[in-house]
Every structure is written in structure tokens, then in C-alpha cells.
Length: 78
Image (tube, rainbow, N blue to C red; front, side, top):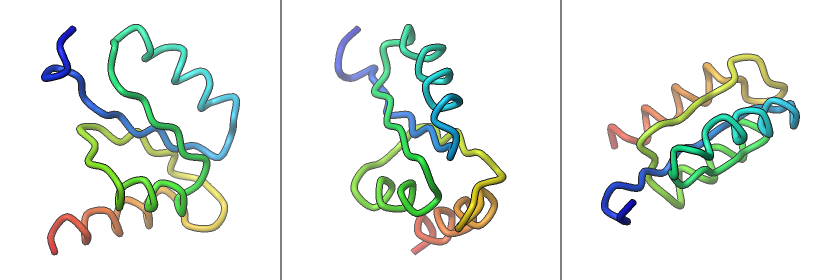
């Protein structure tokens, strides 16, 4: 697969087992997988890189998935 067809996918979940399971399922796609264990960590990732897809757990401590998604959308509009 050429670099031009490699997308970055951000996977966000506070449960390490879920992160590892998603990584295991998606690694065969040959895409760049980035893992984050909180909404805060996801926001830091989004500030550094662009992602084609973000898989986001809705229920997390701290900034939950809904608030994280809202903040990411606000950033993309500005």
C-alpha cells in the first residue's frame, strides 16, 4: 500500500482492553492507527495531526466522548 493511500485513524477509549481489541481488528487495514485513552489525550492528538476517522468512546471519565466530539468539531470550524 502506498503512503498516499494510508489514512490516520484515531481510536479513543478509556478501557485499555477496548483499545487493544480495536487495534487488533483494524491493523490489517494497513492504516496509521493512533490510540488515546481519554478525551483530553484525543484533543492533544487532534492538535498535532489530522485524522480521516476518529472512533470515539461516548462514556469516559473527565471529558466524555460527546464533549470531545463537540470540541473537535469546533476546532475544525475555526
